[in-house]
Image (cartoon, rainbow, N blue to C red; front, side):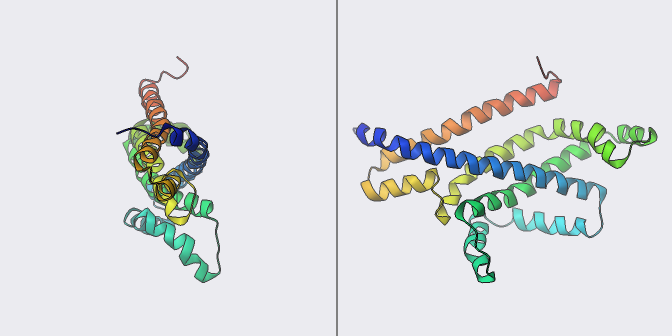
Length: 221
C-alpha cells in the first residue's frame, strides 16, 4: 500500500491549525478543572453545609454522564432556555465540568493523606484555616495527588477528541472531514495519530519528570 505523500503534505496546515485549537481547549479545560477540583475538595474536606451536598451531586452527575451528552446539553439543550454558547465555549465548559469532578477526587485523596498530627500542629501554632491550607495542607496534598492529577490531565487531553461532535474544528473533526472529502482514510488517520502523539508524549514525559521532582523535593536541581 502506497501513501499519498502529496495529500499528507497539503494537509499539514489544516492539522497544525486544529492542533493549536485542541491545545487551547485542553489548556483552558485543564486549568478550570484544577480550580474547580481544588474548591470542591476544600468544601468536602471542611464539610461546609449546603455546599457539600451541591458538590456531591455535581461530582456524581459529572462522573456518571458521558462528555458527549454534556456537550450536547450545552450546545443544543441550553438554546431552549435562550442561552446560546459558541462551539469552543461549550467545549471548554464541558471539559471543565467533567475534569473538575476527577480533579476534586484527586485533591481530596491528597488532602486526606496529610498527617492529622501536622494539621493539629498548625492549628496549635495559631494558623487560620486559610493559612493551614496554604502552608501545610496544599503543598503536601499536591505531592500526594500529583500522579492522579497528571493522569487526569492526559485523560482530558484525549477527551478533546469528543468535542468535534459539536462542530469544533479540532483534530478529530478535521480528520473526518478530510476522509469524507478525499477518501484518504489511512493518511488522515496517520496524521491524526501523529498529531495526538505530538501533544501527549511531551506532556506525559513532563508529568513523569514533575512527579519525580515533587516526590523527592528536588525542585531547582
